[in-house]
Length: 121
Image 1 (cartoon, rainbow, N blue to C red):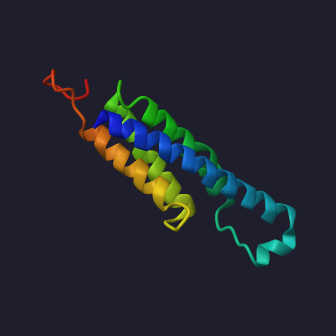
Image 2: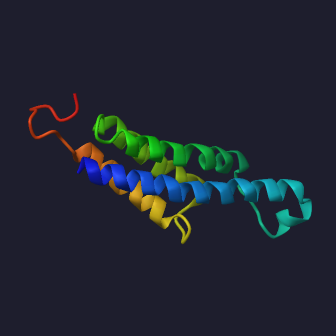
């Protein structure tokens, strides 16, 4: 399960980078072109910008640490999925990174080392 969390988290982060670039660019375009705000409204510009940067980083970092620290990785991956959902919603561009990061987070939290009695500590 740790390997699956690693792969899904990194893939979610890479796809999230594309979503973040589009989201941040969208807010820049609307800020630079006042007339575009009529057509392309951004409700919470600061949340979109913060999520554009933080969400992919959290997913990649969570995926990268899934083998060593599964609990921390799971928290980071679930935070990434939640932040992306809060900023962008669930749509055709975000469905894969949100579901991949969410599934990776659940797998990482559920993962335990078979040799040890305690799963995460």
